[in-house]
Length: 455
Image 1 (cartoon, rainbow, N blue to C red):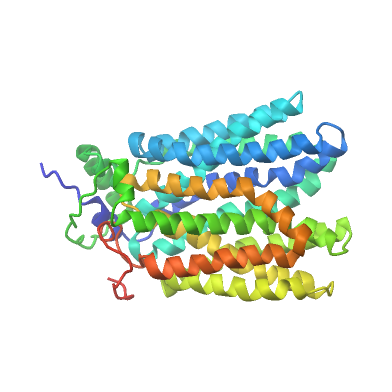
Image 2: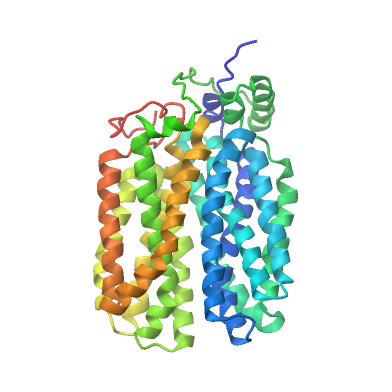
C-alpha cells in the first residue's frame, strides 16, 4: 500500500456539496455558541451588580478570569489538537465550556461564578483555535476564504443575538438563564458533532495513513454523489518537522510574527474599542438607554463586516483585503473622535465597526490558520492566539489611561498605531494563500511572489 494518501489534493478537488455544508453547519453552530458565551459578560454583569450579587471588583475579576482562561485554552488546545487530533479537541473543549456554563447558572456566590467563568474561558479559547483550523483542513482551496469567513460570521453573530436575547430573557428569568441557554446549546451541539470526522490531512501528517485513506474514500463517495470526480493534483512534498522549534526558524518564524502582530491588533481593537462603546457613548453625553441602542446598532456591523470579509477574501486575496480594511479603519478612526452630532455618531461608529469585523473574519477565521502546515497548525495558531488574548489583559488599563488623558481620540490613536504596524507587517512578511493548497504553502518564504490567479 502507498504511504502517501495525498489527502490535501484529493480534498481540494472535491465539488462543494452536502459533506461540506454538514461540516460547516456543525462547526459553525458550535462557534456561534462560542461567540454567544463570550459576549454573555456584557449582558449579565450589570444585573449582578445592581442586585448586589457582585461588586465592581468582582466584575473585573470575572472579566479577567475569562481572558486568562481563553489565553490558556488557546495555548493548550494547540498541543492537544496536534497530538490527539482535531475531532477529540473540538469535542473536549465544547463539552468543557458547556458544563461550566450550566454550573455557572447555579453559582451560589460570585467566587464560584468567577471560577466557572475561568473554566468556560479555557473552552472558549480552545474552540476559537480548533474550529477555524478544522474548517481550513476540509474546504477546497478555491473557496476556502469564503467558507472560513462565514464560520467567522457564525461567531460574531453571537454578539447581537446575545444582546437581543438578554433584553428579553434577563428581565423575565434573570441573568442565570443566559448561562443555561449557552450551556444547553453547547451540549446539544456537542452531541450532534459526534458524527464529525477527523481531519484526513492530520491523520496523514501523523502517519495514520490507513485511517486517512479509509476516511478519504468515504468522503469522496459522499461528495461524488454517483458522479466521477476530477483527478487530484500530484502530491506536493515539503515535509515539516512537528517539533516546536520549527515554528521559530525560517520560513515559519516570519509567519509567527505576522500572526502575533495581527492577533494583538485585532484583539486590542475588539476589547479596547468595540466593547467600550457604551462607556464612550455615555461619556459623550448620551443616556444609558440611547447608549444601549447605539451599541446594538454597532453590533449589527459585526456579521455584516464578517460577511464582507468572507465574500472578498477569495476575490481580492487575503493581503489586499487585510491592508484595505486596515486603511479604512484608520481613516474612519481619525474621523470618529471629531463627531459629536447624535445622528452622525452612530452612523460613523457603525461604519467603523464594519471594517473592524472584516479584519475579524480575515485574521481569526481565514488567514492565521492558513499560515501554518498541518503538522503544527494548531500549536502555531494556539501560540499566536495566546499572545493576542494576552493583549486583552492589559488593554482595559491602557484604554482607561488614554481615555482619561485624551478622550476617545487617545484611544483611537493607540488603535491606529497598531493598524499601521499591522499593515507594514502583512505587506512585508505575509504570504498570499488565495486559491492555493495548504500543502503548496508549506515551504514558501515571505513575501509571496505567487500570481494571484487560481491554480
